[in-house]
Amino acid sequence: MLYIYILILILIVTFGYIFFSSKAREKKRSNVSLKDEQTPIENKPKNKNEIQDILKSKVPNVSSRYIDKITPIYNRKPKPPYTSRDPFNETEDIRLIDFIIFQGSNILLVEDNLINQKIILSTLNKSGMNISIANNGQEALDLLFTQKKEFDLILMDINMPVMDGYTATKKIREDQQFDSLPIVTFTAFTSGKEINMMFDIGSNSYITKPLNIGQLYTVFNTYLVDKYRPISLLESIKIDGLDIGHGIRMAEDDEAAYKQSLREFLLLYKSMIKTMPRWIDEHESDRILSACMNMGDILKHIGAYELQVIVFRMKKIYIYNTEHRIEEFREVFPQKLEKLIKAIERYLSER
Image (cartoon, rainbow, N blue to C red; front, side, top):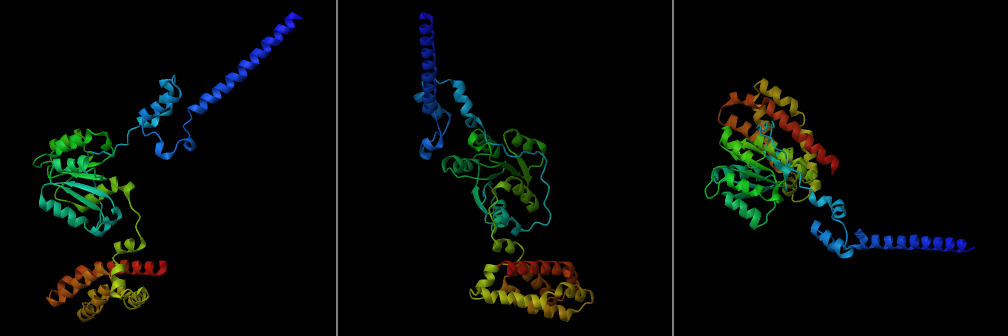
């Protein structure tokens, strides 16, 4: 009988130990919980050290292995930008207005030559991109480190006063916060030595001077693809040669009247996609000049800026008696007109 009592006592103690140990483990887990509902957004830990402090305050004997297991994200580095030592290919048939797809991107041009600065600014002035100018490497560092400006890409010259591109690039790359910032060397040097030195200290690629807009477009298309800003219908149609905002203003802000003008334009001039090349082949000078005279003002009022330029140039040929040059427009005129017609039809169908 004594053995039975002893066995019962042992069972009671064993089950009691299991029960209270389980409760203790549950309480311990709840103390170290970092779930979102228990941690307000503004009080969330911002780095690994803060997580360590929180865990140690709640569980003094927490192991470093456990801390490392739940905080791997703080050890990750930003993905480095694409790097290539080969020259960029030129994107064909690029116009200045095509750069509008990169609107909103922030570009830092580090360049001491005023002419090169003006070329870049004039190339991108209608794109909606934000261009900051630094006249040397030191000014670039001031924008990045002192003024804390954020950029999506840096175009870096090599030979500059005060601080050259080598030193500036090296100092930028020494700071890990700029690991994912593309730096593209923009230089007149074409020998391998200078360019290779820039690659060795952290440049991602290069383009050479004088500026090639097709090559510049390829650069932006490579590094700013994830920075694209949404383009409205009006902006995308403007790329195709029709400035709808201008046209509506010319119609005294009456969009219905503007649409009617576009419909009338289609009725009058859509057929000229085929007739104009025939007139040029047959040397119908009077018909060509008459059509250009009639179209000029209409194109201005509807905001068809690309075709307006073509028509103006065609009129000048007859004004200055250089009719032999009209052949230059046999292909260009119908291409621009067809492009304009598609933009008009798209606007009328989607609005």
